[in-house]
Amino acid sequence: MDKLQEHFDKLLRETTTGFHRYMYDRINWQGRMIGLTGPRGVGKTTLVLQYIKQILPRQDSLYVTAEDFYFAEHRLTDLADTFVKMGGKYLFIDEIHKYKDWSKELKLIYDYHPELKVVFTGSSVLDINKGASDLSRRAVMYHMQGLSFREYLKLFKGIELARYDLSDILEHKVILPDGFRPLAYFNDYLEQGYYPFALDSDFDLKLQQIITQSLETDIPQYADMNVSTGRKLKQLLSIIARSVPFKPNISTIATSLGASRNSIADYCLYIEEAGLIAQLRDETGGIRGLGKVDKIYLDNTNLIYSLGREFVDVGNVRETFFLNQLRVRHDVITSSVADFQIDDMTFEVGGKNKKQKQLQGVSNGYLAKDDIETGYSNVIPLWQLGLEY
Image (cartoon, rainbow, N blue to C red):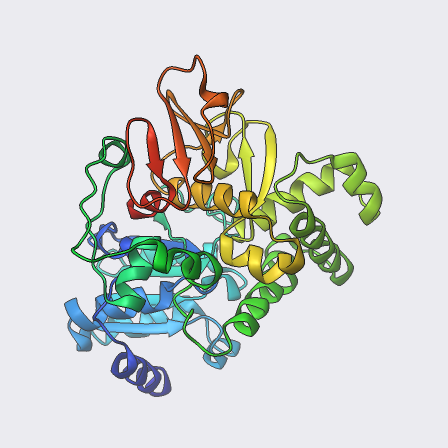
C-alpha cells in the first residue's frame, strides 16, 4: 500500500491542470461507481488525476493502475477493504481491463462498500454488459474520444473558441476572434492534432505503438483470441487503411484473411470499439447499433496519415473528420443521396469548389466545404464542425 501511495503522489505532482478535456465537465462525479472508457492515448488518466488533484482531499483518495505489480499478489477487493478501513472514500482504478476478473470484483466492491466511490478507466473494447458480472445497473459509463479541433486550438495554440451546438453552426452564429485564421491550423490538426501527445517529437512512433497494443493486446485479451487471430486483426486494419472509405465486401476480406465471414464482422466491431475504425451504418443506434454497415473509415484523420501514407485521399480525410467530430453528440448515419444524415438533415462534404448537385431537391440539406473560413446560406465551413465539443 505504501508503494501505491508513493506512486500516486508522484503522479499528482506531475499532473497539470490548465486544460481539461471535454469529458471533465460531463461526468457526474457524485456517482457511486463511474466507468470511463476510450481508445488509448486520449487522456483518460490525466482527466481523473486532474479531478483528484483539484477537487478531492488527498488523504481520502487513492489512484492505482491495474497493471501494477501489486496486483500480482493482491486482489482489488483486498485493496478496497484495506483502503476503506484506513478511512478511504474515493478509489480510482486505471487500466481496469488489465485485471482478469475486473467486473466480478468491481461488483463485489460496490456491494460490500456502499460508502466508497469508485472510478475506473479502461479500454473502449470493454463492455460492462458482457463481463463475468453485469455492472450495467451499478456503473454509469462514459466514453471519451480524442481532441476536437476546438480543444486542439486551446491546448496547443492557446486559442480559445466557444463551444457551439450544430444548430448554431448551421445558422452561422460562430464568432471568430479578431485576426484568427482557422485554416492556418486546420491541416496540422488533421495530420497530427487528435491526440493530446501530438507535440511529442516521437508522435508517429507513439501512435504506431497504440495501434499495435490495441490490436495485439487489448482486443485479444478481452476477446480471448490467440496470437494468430491477433495478426489477422493487423492484416484487416491494413486492408481497411488502403481502401477507406469503402463498402465492405465481407466475403472478399474473409478469403484474403483465411477467416470466416462471421469472424470478419466481429473483428471489425472490436477494431471499431478500440478506436481504430468507424463503421457508418444505415440506421441509428451507436457503435452496437443494428444498422447495416454501409462504409468503413479509419477512426480519425491522424490515423489516415499514420497508416495510409501514400494512400491519403483528401476527400476521405474530409469525410472522416465530419464523422469523427459530429458522432460525439449525434447519431451520424449514411444518406441515400449524399454523404451523411443526422436526424432530418442531409450533409454533403467536399472542397471549396463542391457543387450542390447531390442536394438538389433535398429539404434541410447542407454542404460542408473545406478551405473556406466562413459560411453562407446552406454552406458550412468544414472546420467549424470541430467546435461541437
